[in-house]
Length: 164
Image (cartoon, rainbow, N blue to C red; front, top):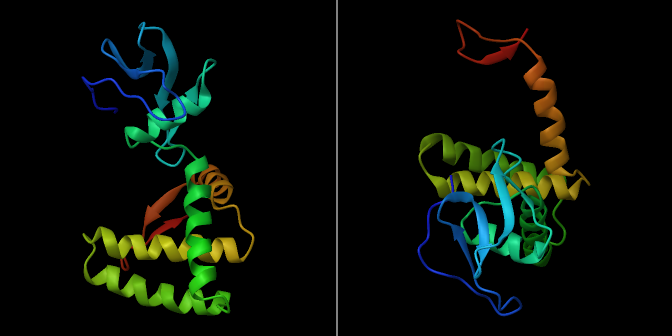
């Protein structure tokens, strides 16, 4: 859930001040109290969706300021990762990325509370997806639709979750 803020915010391109609606923390209001964006928290992969008729750019910045991001941000993050990886490892192949991914998964397995190690895993997953032309946001959405329709169980011997 969005955190309440008492201060009013502005930014360069949008001089119009904005803040959270004190009576509804899913709304962003302008200086006059008029609602300029309404957000609803949805599925953890879908993030926050906005409905803003007055200034969508402002609404996106406002949502980002509160740490709530929607599906478009995964594309931006993937582009940032790919740009960095292309500059540093222009000759990398899918196999190269996967070998590094296996290494990072091992490091994360040794310390499952490490956000940075999990970050390494995610960086490599996004890079390998981009390298292979996969829209990761759509791929995860599509796969979740399948997973949610399946029946699941935990294997008694291995403790591995499997669909039946």
